[in-house]
Length: 69
Image (cartoon, rainbow, N blue to C red; front, side):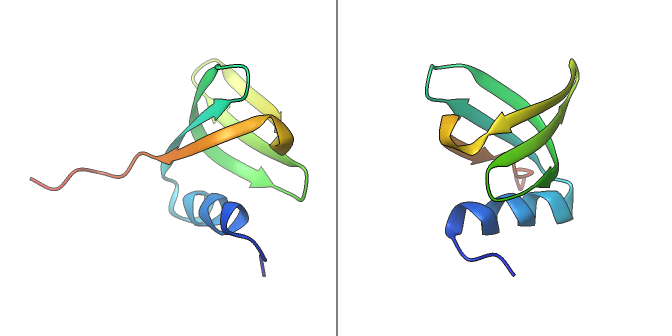
């Protein structure tokens, strides 16, 4: 089982197929679904392809949950 909050959030998004927005430390914004993650990286599937993101480069993760009307 995961040990830290970042891993728990990413694993939950992966299991539920929820889209996430990942902001990198350089200001880049990446949107997609988490395919997998490990101690050092996140594999993100977006419209432009699959991206391997190093966790040390992540500043913020935003969960794109469905809004309730």
